Image 1 (tube, rainbow, N blue to C red):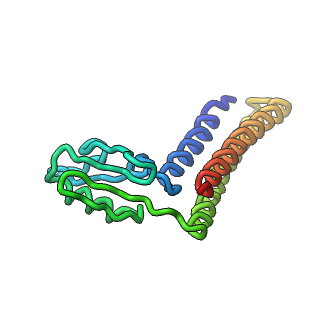
Image 2: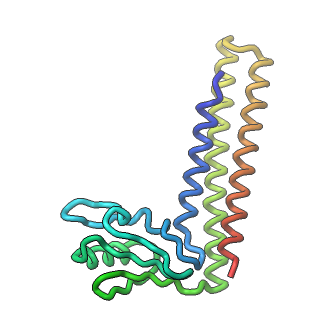
Image 3: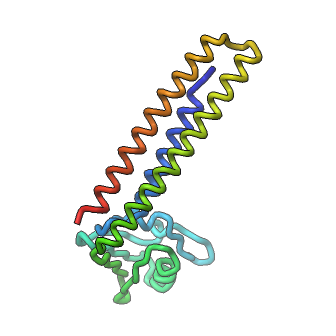
Length: 182
């Protein structure tokens, strides 16, 4: 029985969690939080990165310089309608996003969110494990593999699950530390 497809699914779950973590702002400016923002560019929705230059001139500021200055209003509208909780300021040429210092209370809320996302990823990993174990049981029932092979497969699946759960725990701990660092 091939375990590669299950390892692949678990890897994708971990990647999804890590990309969700990039959108959680930790008081420092990270241009990755703008990855999901789409701007109306001449009638079609385009990623913000493809219509503007994004830079981080200071630790708590992101600067967005559109290639076409007529896009400033559209970019501001896209940022305001996103769930970033940031208010853009523009001078006609560039848009600046200033990240306020996070309060202790807000940091704790963000850590709860980080842990909740981590727990959801663990549940997804366990569901993949269950699917893999079900597949092994079916194969054993259909006499495609022996009971010993089924047990070995289930052990391998459990080791794979443990490996990915440990990686998720590490990601949760790392992001929590980042959020709590003042």
